[in-house]
Amino acid sequence: MPDSQQGFIEEAVTAGRGVIALIVGDRRASHYFDFSQKGLVGSFIGLLSITLVSAILPLIIPGASENYSIAKAAVIAAILFAFQIGFAAIVLRQMKRLDGLQPYLVADNWASFWISAGQLAFSLVGLGGDIAFFALAILVIVVEINISRLIVTLSPLQIAMFMIAQLVGVSIALIVVGVVFPAPEAAAALSSLPT
Image 1 (spheres, rainbow, N blue to C red):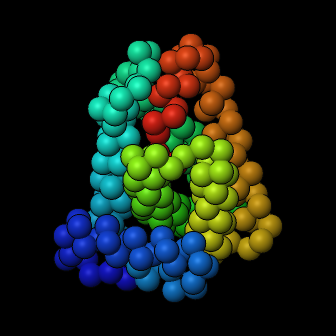
Image 2 (image 1 turned 180 degrees about the horizontal axis):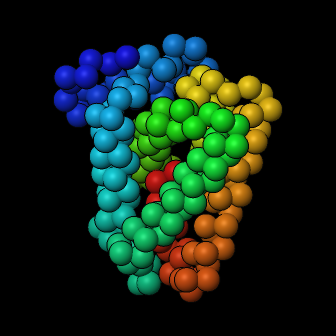
């Protein structure tokens, strides 16, 4: 477990090593994350910071949609996050593994931070498109499975249930977003959100 007295930058760097460990399936991945209350707060600071950067960046780079709004992007991100975490908590409670929620949040928040930072860096240098989207989707699935397996320590059947619950939660959130926001506005905001 990381030193609880380390600063935010050191915590982010250490968590970055943990995300790499998750990507490669290293069983020691949990040692890079701080699962204390302080670590949870730090992971939320990281997630909020990358969400803010992702929300502001479309206004800075050329070619931003006229329908784009930082407020809408933030609301959509909050809706997606709430449904994903809500459904994750529901299934963990059903499995009597609610003790895994805080470690899951810490690892998932840092994974979102680092994967989104990488995605933003690739976007800024013009590397995007369908191949990048496909590669990113596979990366996110691998990381989510390894968080379930290595951090929350779920069995294979529990991992499947956990992943399906999150998928259902995000799908319902997308329906809610589609109802609340017109399609062009939602599409513009969704394209800027962290993974």
